[in-house]
Amino acid sequence: MPSEAELLACCASRRWVRAVAAGRHDDLAALRTASARALAELGWDDVLEALAAHPRIGDRPDGAGREARWSRGEQSGMDAAAAEIRRAMVEGNLAYEERFDHVFLICATGRSAAELLAELRARLDHDVETERRVVRAELSKIVDLRLARLVTEGDR
Image 1 (cartoon, one colour):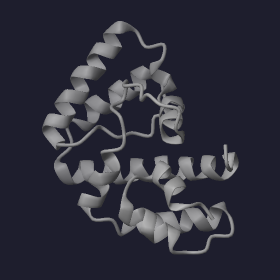
Image 2 (cartoon, one colour; image 1 turned 45 degrees about the vertical axis):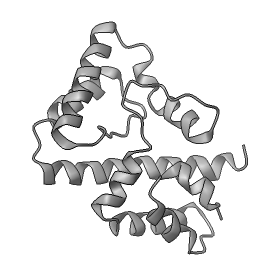
Image 3 (cartoon, helix red, strand yellow; image 1 turned 60 degrees about the horizontal axis):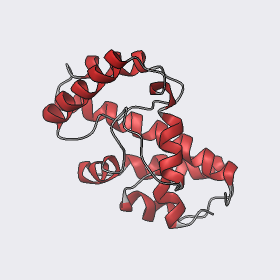
């Protein structure tokens, strides 16, 4: 069973952490089920708390911690991005934050910089409620991937 500190690396919502840590999970499937249930019960303020721990797409978090390492790996599609895509991503991130009041969240694993930028631009057209649904779905994908990494990595 992961500790609360380990769970925080998967999702920075304290409510989510408490809910998942309160149960007994014998395997990854049970952990993911508990996670999905807890994510579905989060209020929007809890989601915002989770979002606050995510860097902007294109920013490289410093540090040797698990969460920073995972984030760098998840965003590796930005590593070889051309300067024009990087500039457009910075501008897009700012426009998104101005429109929605939170960081643009996307499950970036396995996606190219061009794909990430295209998705950011498309999501700028969403209304607030649609975007909140998309953000919740993306958060769920990220948390699932991180839970799997947590279980696979163990104490590394």
